[in-house]
Length: 421
Ligand code: FAD
Image (spheres, rainbow, N blue to C red):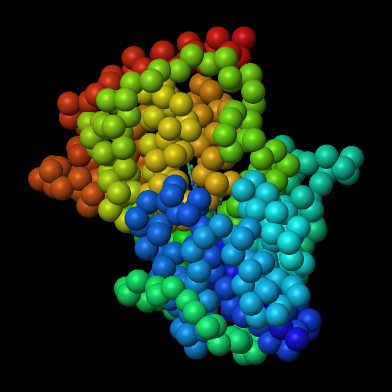
């Protein structure tokens, strides 16, 4: 008997419960990835290139036996299953709104066996004692730890006996992925001890930079959790992984929060729609060097440090008064780790419209943020070459700013105040 293993956000063979289930169910499996035009359309070049790197690595782990097909998965998956005589398709469950709808449509045509998820605890599992979902992180975090997670699943490329596909689209050539286990081990040994202290400093290489691998499932968070201890660095890192689970849980219970304010009283908020200011922000040309450095890191690397994501998001929302979803869309296009749950809710946090919203009167000052978190100005000089001649923290002073922060702060406070009262 045979089955299909349909890979999506789980582009790995280690710690992969769906592979175990597939091997228990059938003698042989076909490894499938579907290039879905609906998802590719919204992804920018860095995201797509990273995805191909992940696919090439997976394919080479599988001895070149990954079948890659373009098209609508609702048509492609059942037809591939039929072509190899498979009665079932095994997947890791997808918790996002589009993925859930797509999977429901596939499941009408072929038996879809959903095993595991991209999270330590699958969305929807951690509930308040009264059965309702958590709306605030800290109590969720406590309940999440009490709930606990499974031990890593012992799987590798030989868990399933793979079928040689009779056709496959060719993956574009390019750089292979680095060894992710080695990346994690280096971070764990060298950076984790100081993570609680250094994680807020974009000028230091203090975070793991594993978000793209977690996003594409090259790594499962449980693999990392199993490796953490009781020290400060481990505790802080564990809580960051819990934020990822929390936002997925929020999206699971309230899928519309990807598109609109979680706290709907902000629907009445007065917003601007200045395209020119938006373009300046996207290009890293606001005249606030710390903001511009963040935006240029995004364009150059497809990744941005968390402190910078908070600073540039605050600037878009509270200095430019633009809709958070404009910024969220730009991020999703460029981030290699672009993830609907973490991104939209990270944006809503900055806009004060989400869960655990930052108090509306806390408006990040882009100059003092820079002086505090990039004290020598090294981060700015790295990404804003025209300022390389300015030494030390003087580099954070605005140059031809598109808006005056002190003034815009008052405008923001008045608009938020009108909603709050
Ligand atoms: P580390 O500090 O090493 O953290 C380890 C892992 O924990 C990360 O890889 C990530 O999976 C998770 N994590 C850390 N912080 C958060 C957080 N605040 N929320 C959710 N998960 C977290 N993260 C994404 O993965 N994709 C996104 O699209 C995304 N968009 C964001 C947008 C905004 C406006 C903000 C403020 C944050 C966003 N984040 C997003 C969260 C965070 O910025 C990144 O996860 C982090 O910068 C990734 O770098 P790292 O792997 O070095 O993180």
